[in-house]
Image (cartoon, rainbow, N blue to C red; front, side, top):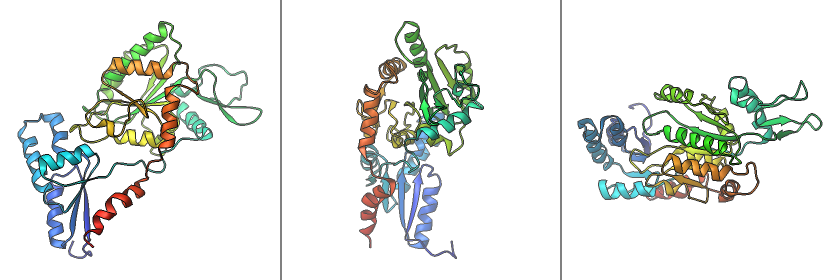
Length: 348
């Protein structure tokens, strides 16, 4: 600190803010720098998931965030709902800077999809072809195959639909909602509804993964396969850009932040079914770029509606994808230049 050139600004993301907000504030006093806090959530609400909202540690953390949050020079936040809450409850004036997907979150070309499916098929049964090929050397996955005459990759006839969700396997996401919806979907197929087989991929790792894997093993589906891989970093955006539908079970601990996983899915033009919480409408526009559900029954009905007649080029699933392609959101750099630079220029 003594040797480095003093910065003009110190940008701190919260959470985590305990004790980093106070430390950053002291450093800014020493350097005569401006402190900018980027509010992505409230740390005390995350603590309350394990301890309860009235636990002494949670109450101290809440007091701390409010007190030291007011000492910042500028504040950014991820939703208009958080912007209002910061002002009303903390007397903190903030500017909304929505999260944007990285540039590598985009629709995946069919050739690249095929390569990823073949790679995953080495370790995960749902990606392997489900029928025998006439040719012994055919290059096939559950979803794609290479045409032996043209050499082009094509989507397999009768392929399953690819459903994807990602999670850190923590208490703020209840995956029993998805599992119950899949049970209902299986029942629809058994009753004769013309629905495709499903491959449900749930990526990520975390403390509750083994618990949910235990529940998954107890399910006996004929038309649904579930796998829970840990993907390499470069494979995750490729799989998102290959999927047919995303599912998000994230519930904000504060009700004021938005799930980054949906931001990334939208970057890949992937329609999403997301569980309801207060400010979700700032990201997921119901019946425009996805659907919002409140329970497993509603999710099951949405899956049935979206996949009926799959893989048709018509219907809501394709409409949502078309709307996402046409939305042309600002990139992260453009959003920063449009929102933050004018704020900083006020002091120059």
